[in-house]
Image (cartoon, rainbow, N blue to C red; front, side, top):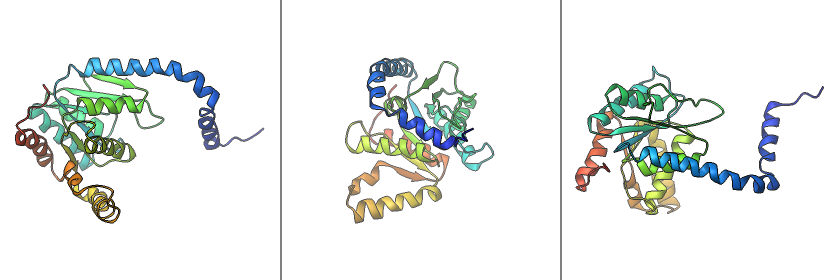
Length: 239
């Protein structure tokens, strides 16, 4: 009996999904699923009021200081009048929803099915959980309905959300909103690389692009950045 390597089978299956005939036959039907996710997201999120999205690793444990800090950030956001949106899963996402719910605020979860780690946490309001199959639809919802981003330590997914927002603001495809990176020790290496390589060596960004985000160490500082942004420009969050 042939001993099939699971990883090889996984790669083979992924390659088969790229078969051109299969792609052409399935694309038309996928449009309806994509449309339905946009419609559900727009209808539900348009009713929630001003919220800030919290991003971070799904792998962060409940006893981690970073988990506790994300919970504190969410609680303080609620005290400032915001609801909290997360990716709906475990780790930092769970901490964000937990902090919002424990402080009596709106707790929103934009969940997505993944092969590991992702499941909706118990701290999401029952009427504010939305499930997605498509990452790009989910990302549109984060950007469209968030009054700010708070980015805790995380992995590829966290960086994806961060740079998506920075790119859209930089290219003026969306209006500016505050983006806060929490944890100087975690973010310093990346920020230094942006400054020394992207800016100074390669000249791939402008000096003013560094003003698109703020790096802080505490929950108080994170929430202050959000509040100060709206106060500075005489704006009100999108109520």
